Amino acid sequence: MRKKGFFITFEGIDGSGKTTQLRLTEEYLIQRGRAVLVLREPGSTPVSEKIREILLDRRNRLSAETELLLYEAARAALVRDVIAPALKNGLIVLCDRFYDSTTAYQGYGRGINLSLIDRLNRLAVGKTHPDLTFLVDVDYSTSLRRRKKESDRLESESAAFFRRVRNGFLALARKEKNRIVVLRGDGSAAQTFTEVRNCLLRRLKIR
Image (cartoon, rainbow, N blue to C red; front, side):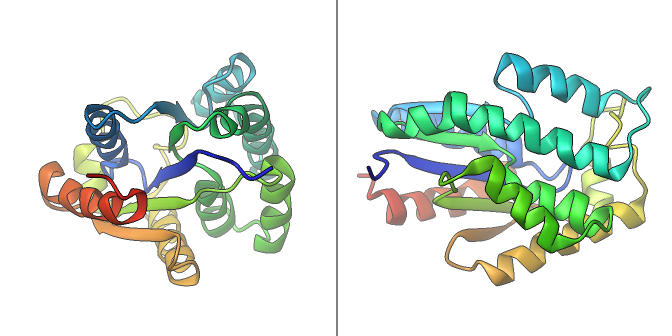
């Protein structure tokens, strides 16, 4: 059975402003009478939230492979327990990160084989894929300036790591032009959201 809902993901390096754009999108859609569910990755289920704690705790030393498999496990739980049922029930699902982050961070950032990551992503999500992805793009210096003072395990990575991740996101956007919309994130949140809103008007036919 074809899903009834619409699945939108928000991507970008840490500090890009993607979460702000998600919240603005949530407010905009609710004001127009749409049923919206907001989620985050990893997280949003009891199991996935526990995995999130492990992944982001700076005290934990994790190999790249361990990190990858934990992300996929959290995603598999979220998709099956929450996202797929919500879409079947006609909700618009907004998710802060999804499998593009795994490709960018663990693939381009950590150097794990991209084909392997693609297979694991597909295993984790089954037939549940984003209909639309907003990639909020900023350079490393902008992202660093915007972050909170205390960094988690991933945010503590080097500038070179985040440049590889950003390049990975942009490579994905070039590959999937029909799904991924690149937004300049170096201006104000309102300026960026104007682009988001215009895209939503076209894709969701909002009046």
